[in-house]
Length: 376
Image (cartoon, rainbow, N blue to C red; front, side, top):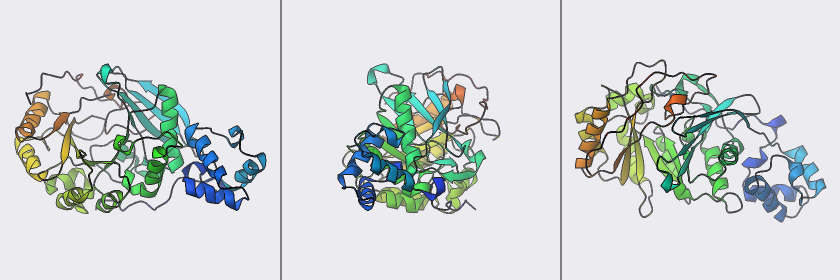
């Protein structure tokens, strides 16, 4: 049976103190009021933490020293720190962070392969490890360790911005962990990142990816505004999905797709379906035809992801001809479908390879040479 949702809560707190970076503006206003300061000081705190991304209370020059001292007694500012950075031949950067309690998590900065589009995607983690146990994913080998706090989540963004020298154009919760298992902290992070007093990320530029937690999808759809939704689907029958994604035994394909149909989409928005192609498992012509039928009546796009290998599972990446034959069947059904060329797979930074290892667990595969895709 699939793992139950981990116990709610965030990461460790300093002597039980809340993480100041995880507090929303109204909560900061209430906190400073309790400490005898006017509510506008809450806005000042938020701007320092999320606009200027300071790391110490002492850096907040326009906040009275008496309030800073009172805050130090009431709250914590747990920090993540840079542990290791690796650069791929394709420009992808994998960044390993260490949390205050010594846990390791990873983020990935992915520049667009066409420089003229000036697109920079940041993939961030929401948990240390993961409880979902997808058989093709390296993070699953870690098991679940703990949730990240909203403060630890947003710090990945701020520190990656400092390293990359710019704000990412797109933010995806597709790193280590299942975001909807950590719903409260992930949605707090979304609200913080969208706030105009901070870095003002557009919700249309933020995507939450899930392995298929149906109740979490329903709750995510109630947010105003809701982020983009991505579904890690990866199979067209329950028999195969049960085997490679045990969560399917609790929320099978039919229930998952019904939640997707109910997810509110504003004009022009679509649900993204991620489909990791495993040779001889889910990449047949029959699978492609079934996928066209399954996604009927759901505004969608499909990302085909040739499996990114790591030592352990007995899967194989499909041949490129098979990948593009699968895509061609979907295109014949007028589906929006894209093949995601592996990025960062030479440093274990590609989709499904994150495990915060001391050394990369590389499996030799031929470098991806994109053939001319079939005509649209």
